[in-house]
Image (cartoon, rainbow, N blue to C red):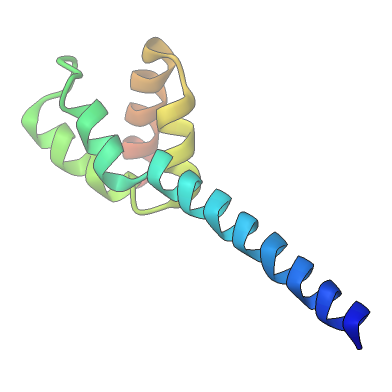
Length: 85
């Protein structure tokens, strides 16, 4: 019985670590963070800025946007907005 309790305790600890990592990744690629980065980009018109918000609804898009270098970021974002019209 003691081994079972020990095993369950270890499983619970591992699950907590996985949940913390998932939360960290969500925060790192949040919509707010994307909008903060977007607000520093002078290459977009106000209309393009507003259209970009819909791109950020997708988690993979947010991760790409935050991870890309600035030049690729603007090109990728404009492509995403053009294909979603």
